Image (cartoon, rainbow, N blue to C red; front, side):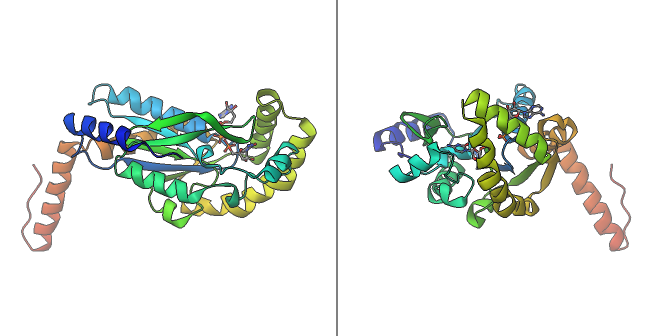
Length: 266
Ligand SMILES: Nc1ncnc2c1ncn2[C@@H]1O[C@H](COP(=O)(O)OP(=O)(O)O)[C@@H](O)[C@H]1O
Ligand SMILES: Nc1ccn([C@@H]2O[C@H](COP(=O)(O)O)[C@@H](O)[C@H]2O)c(=O)n1
C-alpha cells in the first residue's frame, strides 16, 4: 500500500476536524472469515444494505467493506510464472502481507484515511494505477479467508463472523467463478483446488472458526442470522436510552432487594 501523501493526509485531517469528526468514537470493526466462495462478500453486502436502510433515519452512519484480497503481496517473477500455471498457493498465509493488514486496520481504527492496492485476479497482481481510498467510517467489515489467522489482527475485531457453507457448494461456485468470470482452464482450477485450496482451508482457515462470535450457516441465504447481527450492531451504534434506563432500574431493584429493600422499577 502507498500511504496517503503527507499533503493528502493533512487535507483530510483538516476536513475531518472542520466537520467535527474528531470526537467520533472508533469505528466498529467486524471480521468476516470463511472458506473460498462461502459467501463472505455476499453476507457483507447484505449487512451493509440492511444497516444502510436502518441508518437513513438515524444520522447516516457510514458502513464499508474491505476485502483481504487487497493484501495479497507482490509476487516474484518465478512465483508469477507458477501462478499462471495454477501452481502458486494463494491460500497459504505466506501469500499475504499481514504487516500491511495490521497497519491498515490500526489506521482505520484511528479513523485515518487509508489507500489500498486494488487487486487484479486476471494478472495475479496489484493493479499498477488503481487504488482504493478508504475514508473513515462508523462500521468497517473486513472479509477474507484468513482474517482471523493472525492473533494481533484477530484481536482488533469488535465482532467476528464465520460464514460456514457446505464445501460442495463452495467448490461449484468457485469453479463457475474461475472458469466463467476469470476464464481459467477447468483442469487447472480443479487441480489447484485439490492441491492448494482445500488443504489450506483445512489447515489455516477452518481452525479459525473457533474464534468466531457468530457462525453463519449457508451465508447470505441465512436472513435470520443476518437480521440478528444487524440488530446487534444497531443496538451498539444507537443505544436505546429507554432500554438503557430500564436495565439500570432493574439493576437498582436487584441491588435494593439484595440489601433488604424492595423497590419496583417504574
Ligand atoms: N446464497 C447464495 N446463493 C447463490 N449464490 C451465491 C450465494 N452466496 C454467494 N453466491 C455466489 O457465489 C459466489 C461467491 O460468493 P461470494 O459472496 O463472493 O463469496 P466469498 O466472498 O466468500 O468468496 C458469487 O458468484 C456469489 O454470487
Ligand atoms: N490471484 C489469485 C488470488 C487468490 N485466488 C483465490 O481467491 C480465494 C480467496 O478469495 P475468496 O473471495 O474466494 O475468499 C483463495 O481461495 C485463492 O485461491 C485466486 O484464485 N487467484
